[in-house]
Image 1 (cartoon, rainbow, N blue to C red):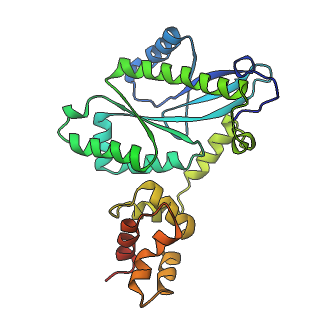
Image 2 (image 1 turned 135 degrees about the horizontal axis):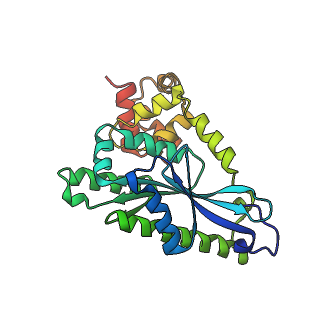
Image 3 (image 1 turned 135 degrees about the vertical axis):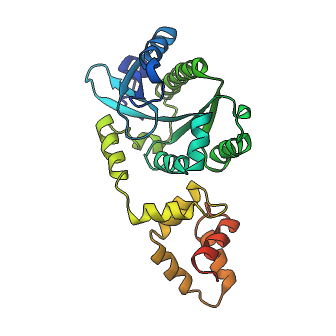
Length: 270
């Protein structure tokens, strides 16, 4: 939540601004996109370089001019780009970065009709996995104009969401204690994530294993940050194959039994 004082109304204290990444793939229409969203929905839109995602929202304090990153972020993919990113595994890496950026409401915006593509089934499967297994909010649009409308409607919904939280004091203790970071802090935190670590490499390796999603890989490296630490844990159970197969499942609710067994086969199985 943005900083809040008792009795304050969100829309009186803050103005919400949609921030689009300056590399967003709108081609020569980028200026038109910004102007169109502004005019159709009467909302504020700015274009900046984002460290992750294609769009997010900030709340700017009207008096202090301080900016706070709200808990929503969008990754936009047209179906052709999604098909390419599935083939070269970019979409896994991009979703992993989104999951680690610190924002909780992750929106995956798919633009276009996957049925028009040769690889329609793989695109549909990727969308299903992203939404059902990994917890993203997958939104679909028919094309460019519909995407513009979607950004506008999302912005209005986000303003309403925070309006209701402020006016009704309708948030729990964890939300009260979790103050939104400033935009500059958000950028710095995400830039730190760009530094590839051994754990990052290990997570990407794990995601090649059947039934291992981004969420599963993150759960594993939280307990065993390196391949060596996981192998050591397996070695302590040497001789008890069932215990080794079920070890990750027993250690984390996020790791299913199938994924636990598959990881064991990769790391330790003959």
